[in-house]
Length: 324
Image 1 (cartoon, rainbow, N blue to C red):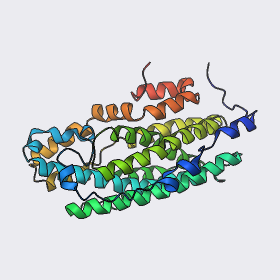
Image 2: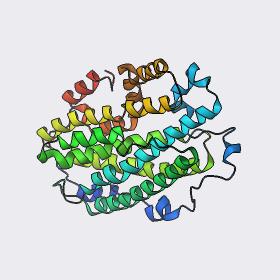
Image 3: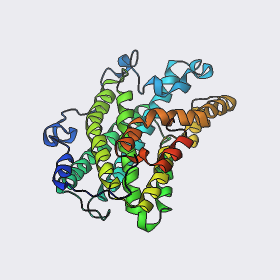
Image 4: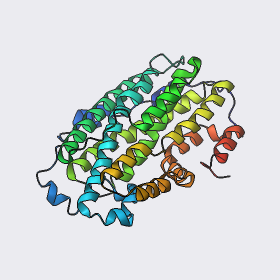
């Protein structure tokens, strides 16, 4: 059975009670964390058994030509990747996610329950803190390795901004919210996977604090999406379906320019660099990353009834994100 084009919100009180970050005041890292996220004094010793970034996320480091360069170069490439990830996270949190949250306070032209609006401000506060500690840790690691390859605007942010700029004004607020929805449902899964490895202690602590917050944010954005989906007319739903597909694809693209410069900086032969990039950017590799990383996003869409609509189901099946 497909969801109706417009479903009335006939129980506003029960819906309203769902939209909360719970005991935010006693659990959010910005309220409770006592960690300073400073690099440990025994950093060199830790790097004998720990990593800057999970090896499972950096499969390209297993390339024979890279392994042949030795542990010092591999640590440097891992640190490069972590600094890039933290710089990206800093921009994502305060320029993208918090801009998305702002739409909940009036721009979406929907009757927003008070508790949903309060939770949005709590989330806004969290994201500001995430940007702060991500930037602080990135600066420390960049200082250790003299990392100068730090794009002011990471590729993914540029792609998202371009997508949003091309969105018609009548759908702009909805587009901003959808970008935040995809981002927050993806990053919770990403951080969960990252935290499974043995990382440098301060990196591990920061990522775990971040994950604890993002797990609640993912649930919140999923519920708000469900709420909004029930208020959309057919044209809004068609727009949302197409845009969601574009957003998900962007989140799993590789920043080829940065990756190339990072590998070249390690002294790798251009043939090796091209080979590594070819493997990372192939359509099959990109789709595999999307299917694996967007699981929580797709589950939220399914729960909201999004996949019940034949058009949406066919659209996402054709893209390879869901199976028949």
